[in-house]
Amino acid sequence: MQHVLVIGGGVIGLSSAWWLLEAGCHVSVLERAPAVGAGASFANGGQLSYRYVAPLADAGVPLKALHWLLQRDGPLRFRPEADLRQWRWLASFIAHCRADVNARTTARLLQLGQLSRAAMAQLAPVVPPAAFGWREAGKLVVYRSARAFAAAARPAGQQGGTLLSAADCLAREPALADAQARFAGGVYSAGEAVADCHAFCLALDQRLRAHPRFGAVLQGEARAFVTANGKVTGVATSAGVIGADAFVLAAGIRSRDLAASAGIDLPLYPLKGYSLTMPIRPGDRAPEISVTDFERKVLYARIDDRLRVAAMVDLVGEDTSLDARRVAALKRLARQTMPRAADYCNVAAWAGLRPATPSSAPILGATAYPNLWLNVGHGPLGFTFACGSASILADLVTGRAPPFALDGLTLR
Ligand SMILES: Cc1cc2nc3c(=O)[nH]c(=O)nc-3n(C[C@H](O)[C@H](O)[C@H](O)COP(=O)(O)OP(=O)(O)OC[C@H]3O[C@@H](n4cnc5c(N)ncnc54)[C@H](O)[C@@H]3O)c2cc1C
Image (cartoon, rainbow, N blue to C red; front, side):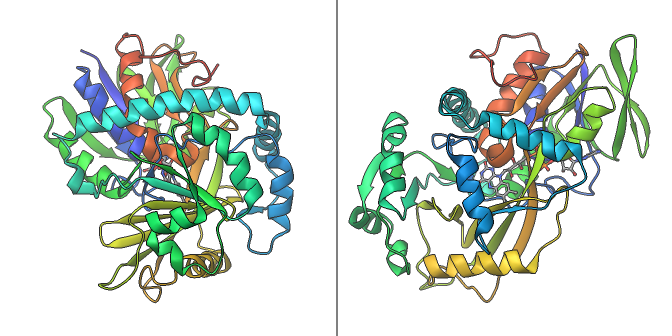
């Protein structure tokens, strides 16, 4: 049976490793950080949005983006870089901003979402949901303007969401009653979940280490692929060259440079986002349902006894520094919307890079090398799609047919 080296110990790499083991492979993981799950998977929004997949690229988004850029503390920030990849990604993103393209991507992501939900349920006997705060919280997307609410009505109906009036939103999620703003209405989706992605990575890591076909989590930084006769023969790392029969690239945004070392051009760009995590005290009015504030682009998820608030898309390159102004802006927005939900004097702020494709669809499977596979580009929904993407990847690596056609989800 083949030995597979998975590069990257984030939620995508670890899930890939598990499904490859289950498919009969021998697997090791290469991770540059001292611990797994320390990249984009560390403190993300915690929403498992299996049905509300909403690709970022859509008709009208370029115009909205201009409006957001003009807002002082808007959801979008752009810092031009002397990096062709930024401009190429933007051009391709704009080309994807069409209703028909959005509808096609949405259809594929819905399939991947359903598969991911089922795959995560399969994991439950191995990685108990309680170990990572998994809870079927449902999801409520609230709209401030009647126009945005009306525009959401049709797609929401198609995706099985329930339309709620403003009063129904407050009845369903009382934490919204404290908001300074008025809402025009909302779309509720039952079956969506919340969980702690980092805790999921740690729990999965533990299970991997106990699996008889698992080698190790090797600590080292992959620097380049070594190729010969049309195959990948190894990975040059900070700890020397590591060989394997097959290689899975799942290194988040860094996959871009590693792929380039083998002549593969991945259309990825880092979309920087921020999160705040605050303890929920007895008597706080935290949301039970996970909430998305549509116009402000802010997510709220109660994970165990903490409130996670996540937002912002900053196109600023591979910069993970905490910009104090962005953190303060997010705190202000959260306080205006859910002032009594948690202890705002005790905030842990974090920034991470969503490894995003222009279409918002991940890139799964084959490359020009028969033994190099991809599981990259999950953008804003990597936790949601991790288990489904991993099961598809394991199918492809072991020569099984995936459960649905993958057009739009491959490098081609
Ligand atoms: C603010 C924010 C909110 C989000 N909210 C949600 C949400 O609510 N729901 C959701 O589903 N998704 C959400 N996401 C997206 C999700 O977090 C990402 O899509 C997902 O974590 C990507 O996982 P990954 O494993 O591809 O990348 P990462 O988690 O970044 O993992 C890549 C790993 O590879 C390692 N690595 C990198 N380079 C090398 C190298 N050269 N050699 C060895 N190892 C290397 C890194 O150290 C890292 O551990 C959010 C993201 C952000 C930033």
